[in-house]
Length: 404
Image: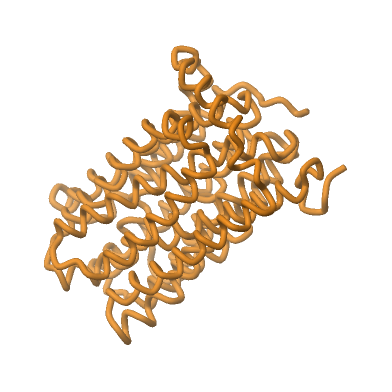
């Protein structure tokens, strides 16, 4: 028996709770946190006086800290448990967001934004272990997709709130307001999980992760390496697509922060359902086909940005990206939860996120220095399209996931 949401009724309350709370946590750490810098980069650059190269360095620092945290995460969850690591990461992210409102230099900004990368890794990586234990196999793609869509809720809110606060109070107010809201969400989510999904904090979780950490040699399989490669490609493509959108459209094409904020909100609005919808499709046609489709949409969106001739192209590109982005980051962990024992999912997903961090750091860093080489950020979007096409082709190397 399953509920109307497709979540297993074996432990139904716990699985629904985990899905909702983790979706909210994704909104906080990614949508309101890590990706907020991309939206405000142009405003902050004018105030603090740093160049486009610094944007690349700062976002690369965030991804490097994400990478380091991904490496440490399996051992940390083995000691503290998945639930505790997740909650502490979200609380820390909210406090860091508030602290960014006080920065006076690019160095301080880089340290704090970089720290958000570590919070993101410590939050998202342990979720796969909890989902593996609370959601039945045939429905894990849609649940992982829903959690991935949490980023969209945050981006939608940021795209709506940030322009209003920037115009009225300045960019510092955005970080402060969203930071306070994030801490509130983190604390509320902790009490909800404790009451309705206590298995997220179970002691047996620690032993399971201890076992997975000690089996590192068995992680280097062809399937895992392929998944990790796809995550690296995703980071190299999706990171720059978002990170340089505001700068490319604002500084090279004279579009306002209000217009870019509208595009940001469209991405978030589509993400409210696209991750779950593509996850639902993946549960029916297979994750491989859904992944290939998502990478195809990503490639098309980048080409439209690069060759746009009017706002209709930009709206079309935004729609395609909104449909693909959340699906890619939901389907990868879904594949892991469907093909790995629950006790090893955190270790495998940690490896995937290490590759994701490396890919995103390289993509953002390279994109930041592209104008010096080619004279325009347009080249970034052509490169994104090429990477997405290669990733779509590489999906064929993955074995089919079990259906039951």
